[in-house]
Structures are given as C-alpha cells and as structure tokens.
Length: 429
Image (cartoon, rainbow, N blue to C red):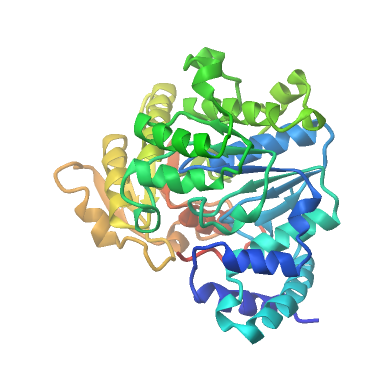
C-alpha cells in the first residue's frame, strides 16, 4: 500500500493535467464502479454564491434529525479529506489512500483503451465521495457542484431535488459572459420531473432557468414565493449576514421538497440552523492576544455586496473600521474586491495567494490608486502569521478581517493551526 505522500503525488499529477469540463468521462467511470450514486438519495446544489453555506445548512438539519449524512463540497481549506464527509467527519489520510488505489485500478483500466478517458482529479474526488457514501450507507447525500452545473462531473446524478442558490458573473471564461448564459449552465443540473428550488436570482437569470425547467417539466419554487423577500420571514441562522438568512430559507425549502422520508421536524431544523459550522464565511477566530480575526471568502461581485454589508455592521459594532488583509485571483475579481476594501478600512495589507492566477502585490496596489490614502503594505502569509494563533498586524483593540480568495484563507488557517502543515491539493484552476 502506498504512503499518503505517494498518493498525494499521484493525485497532484492528475490535478496538474488541468480541469476538463464534460460529464462523459465521469459517466463511464461511474458505470465501471457500479454506479454507487444510485444507492442513496441526493440533494444537488449549484450557484455562484451560497451553495457551500446551503449544503452546510442542509447537512446540519439532517444530522440533527438523526439522519446519517454525506457531504461533498469543494475546494477544501486545509486538508483534502474535507471534501468528503460523513456526519461532518472528513475522510482520513488512510481512507484517501484506500479509495485512491481502488479508483486508480479502474481509471487506468479505462485509459488502456482511450488515454483521454482517464478521469481528472475532480472526477476522482467525486467518485471517491460516491463510493464512500454507498459503502457507509448514508441516509442522504448533499452534493455541491464544482463549476457551473451542466458540464460538472457531479451532474451524472439524479437527485430528489435540485437547488440553484444564486447567479452572478463569475468564471465567465468557462460559463459565458452574460447572466442568461451562466444561468443556463447552472440549470443544466435539472433532471426531468424533479423539483427545483431557487434563491434570489436577477430577472434575466431567473427567466433563463425557468425556460429550462419548463422544458424538463420541473416544478419551481423560489424563496421569494414563500418568504416574500421580507427578511423577518426567513429562518434565522448563526452565520453572519442577511444573505445567510436567505440561504437558510433555500435550505429549508430544499429539505421540504426532498421527500417525506427525508422530513425534518421544524423545531429540529430551526435549532440546527443556529449551529452551522462553515469555515471561511465570516468565521471569527480569537488570537492568542485576545484580538478578533475574521475570515471571509469573497471572490465575485455578488459576494462583495455581502462583504460590504458585513463590514458596515462591523463598524457599527466597534465604532471603527477593521484592518483588512486581502488577496484574490484574477483582475475582475480584484477590482470589485478592492473597491469595497478601500471604502471600509484605514489600513490594508496586500497578500498574494499561492495560486497561478493570483494577483500580484503591484496589481492589487494599482487598484487602490485614487481611492485610498491610508496605510498600504505588501506582505506574505508566512510573515504575518509566523506561528499558531499569532498575527503580526495591528495592535491591542484592533479587529482584523482577511478576505478574498478561499485559497488565501486556507493558507492562513493552516498557519494558525496548532498542528500546522502544508495545505494539500487545493484546486489550481
């Protein structure tokens, strides 16, 4: 049996081949494995923003009601096993070795006939989740799409209910440069006759999704239909931000449409929504010196709206703006992010995530010209977080916010951990 390091090397090699959108390889791979996804009920969740939070909420409600839950999400923050969880227990290194060896035999057998049919890294992880959930006999699996929907490897499944949390401009290179095009890509997860739950979508996007739903005879329920866009009507949750209450409403509706055998008592569901653990979403950490550190993944314009609302509330609570550390991938994301950051801080620390598409310090700095006159610094994660529980930025009484790429947050969390180690196998798309 190989070591975990050797398994990493194999999976790294798959990842370095790049992502290949399309479900044909995954269909063949899954069939060769005996179609494990058919052995448990599934809720399938897509969306530009909010899909991870909705998945976490669904998982929490089902687990609180006594169901054995499977959860598949991406990317991970620190360890690869975070992507595949049962009752919120991630895959161990030993399990990853075990499943990789089994999947490798099948994958390499398929590649003998056609090298292009060898599964990608993400397809390996999807198959790993399906096998694990089948063999552990989960009662329900919550499956998050990786990118888009129509061509995502998770789209071979037939769920009880499909969910589209939101649609906004992101990943335009792969999904299209209009809301209509992106919405149709995400609506590609709809299966004939299966219900769809929609979050708050722009009119252009909702029209596109409804057209796809009509062709596939899918019933459509939106949060606006049920909660009438009155925030007081939405279920409360412990996650920060008005948008998270909308996500809680989406999760509740998805649960209601999943079938009578997957029902959750209302009081249990409401209690569970107040116990959500979803790292990197306005996550609050107390440093060794007692200061508060807030981590919030923000990677597109829609996410920046939520970030700005949270920063306004933070200033109202503490009477002053926080210090902000930020870094992201791609100029379009950076421009929107820096517009918000420069409005809500007196001090900025620019960081470059360890990703090929990461914006450099100089690129981020250029986006502050004419917008920001406060202190502006370049730094690295290692410099600012030299040991577990320590941040070198600011002084007593300061609140620190780290925002931008989820990969940056993963690097920071790795440095903050008492048992620190390299974050392994984050996607580099």
